[in-house]
Length: 470
Ligand code: ADP
Image (cartoon, rainbow, N blue to C red):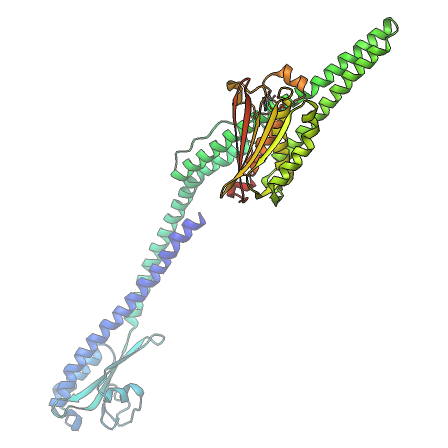
C-alpha cells in the first residue's frame, strides 16, 4: 500500500509544482513581449520626433503616459549620458542612472528583470537611431506583476483542491488494490501454516496471477516430495523395527525353551551349548544390522559431509581385496583384480571403500564354493569404472530393480542363512550417488552377476548440494 500511495501521490505533487511554475513563467514571458512591442513603437516615435534632443511633441508624451497607465507602471527614458530625460512619475528627471542593465542596453541588448519577491517587472529597451545605427538612449519600464501573482495563487488553490481529491482517490484505490494483491499470498501463508506437524494438507490452487500459479505449483511439488519422504520414512522405520525384532524374537524363543526344559528336568549340557551358539549368532546378526543402519544413516546426511581427497583407486581396491581374501579363501573362491591403468581420482575414501567392499562381499557371499570374483578397474578422460563380476547364483530379472532398496533381499530365508541384512546395496548406491556416479547390474539367474560402477575422476559439487541425497 505504501508503494502504491508513493507512486500515486509523488507524481501528483510534482505535477502541481510543474503546472504552477510553468504558468508563472509563461505569464511573465507574455507580459515582457507585450511591453517590448509597445516600447518599440514608442522608441521609433522618440527618434522620429527628435525627442532625445529635447523636443516634446504632444503625441509622444501621450503615448508614454498611456503606456504607463495601461500597465500601472513607471516609464523612464535616459539619454546617451545616462541622464533621465523623462520620468512618467516626474520624480527623478535630470538624475543619472548607472545600472548594469542600462549599460548592457547601450550595446543594443534588450533585457528584463523579474523581481519575484517585490512583485514587479523591469524591461529595458534601447532607443536605436536607424540612420546612424547607434543607441542613443534607453527606455526603462517598471510594471507591477501583482495580477500574475494573484492568478497564480488562484490557480494554486484550484490545483490544491484537485490534488487533495486525487490523493483521496489514490488512497482508496491503493487500499483496495493492495488488499486484492496480497490476497493470494495470505492463502499461501495459511497453507504453509496448516502444514505444521506431519499432516500434509491438501494441495493448493491459485490461478490469480502467473506468479502465484508458479508459487502454488512449486508448493505442491514440495508437498509431494514431503509426502514421498514421509512415506519412505515410515516404511523405513517399520522395516527397521521389524528387522531388529527378528533376532530378538529368535533369542527369546531359544531362551524360553531352555527355561521351560529346565523346569521339567535337567537340561543336557550339549543342548545348552547348541542354544547358546544359536543365540550368539542372532546377536551377531543384530549387530550387523545395527552397523549397516549406522552406515546408511551417515550416508543420508548432507553431501557436505564428504571428505574428498585425491586417491589412488588401484591401491584402495587392493586393500579391500586383501581384507576380504580370508573370507573368500575359506570357500575356495578366487579373487582377481584386473587393473588396466593407474587411476587417481577425487573421492571420499571411507565411503567408496564401503561401497566397493559391499559389492565384492556380495560377490563372495552369493557365490558357489570354488567360484570366482573378478574385479576390474578402467579409466577414460572423465570417469573411472569398477566392475565386479562373480560366478554366483545370479539375480532374477524381476528382482534386479529392487536390490538397491533398503532391506530388500531376493530370497529371505537363503540370505538369512548367508547373513545379509538387505542394506548393503542401499549403502553402496547412496555412496556412489554422493560421488555423482552411477551403478548398474547385469545378471542372469544361475549364471552369476556383474555390477558396474562409474564415478567421475574430479568431484564437482552441484548447485543443489545442500539438499539431502535421497
Ligand atoms: P544383503 O545384506 O542381504 O546382501 P544387499 O543389499 O547387499 O543385502 O543385497 C540385496 C539382495 O540382492 C541380496 O539379499 C541378494 O539376494 C541380492 N544380491 C546382491 N548381490 C548379489 C550377487 N552378487 N549375486 C546374487 N545376488 C545378489
